[in-house]
Length: 115
Length: 113
View 1: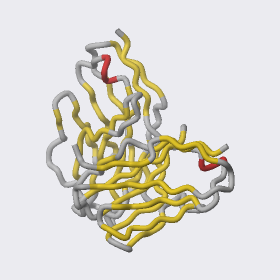
View 2: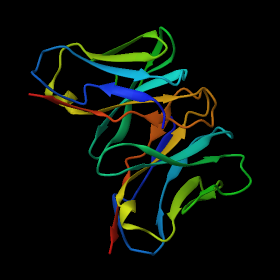
View 3: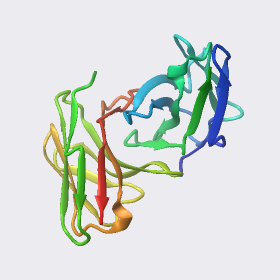
View 4: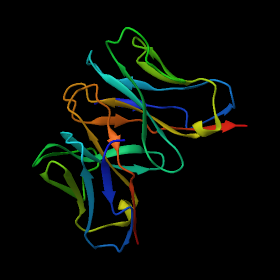
């Protein structure tokens, strides 16, 4: 079965600093996609960034980037220059490599940005 | 923003009563999903649909049923609500492409008393 592991229940970062949120995944399929979502205290789920297993470069979207290490099966989210509005839950997810039918989510990491 | 609407947004119901949550999309996406979110568990898939009248179970489907009679609507029914089904329920949609992200509704907070 596919699985996503996020081992950091909570993280703190000083404003304007960078922070890395960890995500490891388990699949034997060579082709897969990884996603990161943000859930602020208001509750909505916001898509942040996508990384395909065959992408040659790490994905970047503004202040978000993915540190993708395929051999280690890790896809860590890096947030640069943290802002107070980055305080939220962050979820890593993988779309089912075999069927594409569903998304598997990790348990999330709660990030708090300290002024 | 993707056009996806959940109703109701909040509901309190009594144990043993049936409850139906509705998800409506205006994006014509093929896939629709129902997830529940509980502390310490992240998002867990209840059921999903890959087309009209085509549905399948997720990892926590016991006690839930779904129906999709139109592309735009995906209904989640709790036949006889239990306190363990108190949760936040999210509907999501996605296109069929393997690299397509899921878009989420605003969520429904359901309390079973």
